[in-house]
Length: 331
Ligand code: ATP
Ligand code: MG
Image (cartoon, rainbow, N blue to C red):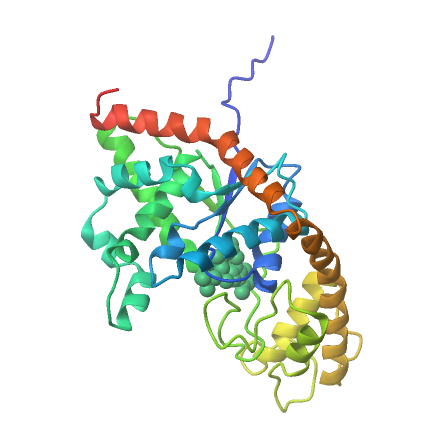
């Protein structure tokens, strides 16, 4: 008896998105970039710099451009291998916006308006861009465009992935099999790095004053000071207790995430901070040095982006082609 393997090839394409809303920080590295780099051998990943998303709130054109280029440079410096993991600038693959529109034709206003990020960001009042309302649909397009079977999602992105799945299923049901329905995966090390000054908030590019954020390109002295000033507590024991000791818990988390090691001294916050500082400095020094080399040659980085777009465009064009035909557009 012979066994024939008929299973469809398992697709393990993974998509990781970064918005050029600011400079990349330690949370982006430990929570997203390192897992992406670690998976490079096993999964076919795409690193997406989502510049269109950065325009859903008030933005400075020059800043979005500069952050996009800097993020691509930092990705290379951190070890993203563009041969295996194309680095793609969203706006350079026009299929993102084309699929966005087609998906808007199966999404409802209610679905978009329910999105937590829209509610939060629009609650502040003032002028709310229409693109802020529809951006989860653009994100659904980002995901569905590349037939990604797995999308690494942090908790803050669950709702967006659910929308992508809902729209994919709805489109497939109404108009015929078109999209791969993506599955959300927690990156192996689902590190969630909190703000060092306010450990109740996650470290973010655009939140807070910046006092609790460790930028990947920050000078050593700035990093040392940020860690030295990190919020702790009056308990006086180095242990994990997210409720009562969120700052200390975050520092321990950063240390173990980087070194795989537990703190050596259980009594001194100063010693913990020194250990964390040593680990962070060792981690970031080579990235900073490589970034300095690469940023002397912006054309090289632009070339990487152009090559990334070229590499993924056929996949994107095929998906949009299927969607156009299914939904009723002429060739
Ligand atoms: P913004 O404040 O503009 O939303 P951000 O810092 O949240 O910026 P994103 O571009 O939204 O960064 O996310 C890029 C990737 O980094 C995502 O995979 C996201 O889950 C991850 N990420 C962001 N912040 C953290 C954090 N503090 N800890 C771990 N992972 C994070
Ligand atoms: Mg974010």
